[in-house]
Length: 112
Length: 117
Image 1 (cartoon, rainbow over the protein chains, first blue to last red):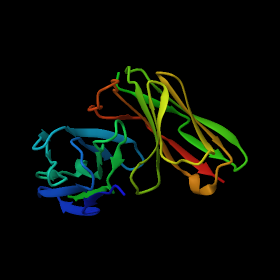
Image 2 (cartoon, one colour):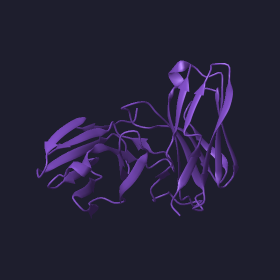
Image 3 (cartoon, each protein chain N blue to C red):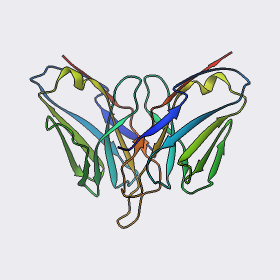
Image 4 (cartoon, rainbow over the protein chains, first blue to last red):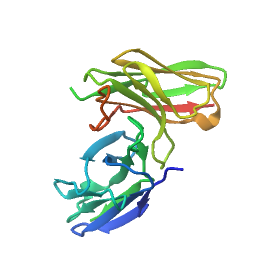
């Protein structure tokens, strides 16, 4: 059974602090996606990571991919309240075309 | 235009009703998806259409029936649903090229919040 696990599931952090969210998956894949979901809203694409060692940065968020360890990280630098949301990673197994499997999600709350 | 639209936004139906959810995109994407999302849970893949053909059915009960009339439209027909089917139903689309593994991300619609009584 394919598993995509994130930790932590819940994260409460103060503004200005740094933290990392981890995404572990149990299948071989060279494609990893990060999404953000605000309460009651749909999902918004953040990053697409397509190869081992890929690193993408946008504002205070930086994502990386290690396909050998089957691990992706989402690093938050100097958090601000606007980053409060639920973050999902998603993988597409190598033996499939369009099957996106989502991680368990990390609910982030940034406290002033 | 990077928008995926879904109608209706909210739907309340009884267990004997028949209803349909609609999804539309005009980005030229040839892969379209239906997901079900329960509160505080990740989206669960239900169906994938590639070039208007059903390519993936994740063992979804037959009371959910997908339809892809053309490359821009995706429907989900609902019949004899159960209260546990109440959830947010999300449509998404992405690029797809025959013979290539898709790399681009998915674009999600705003969702239809369904309540089955």
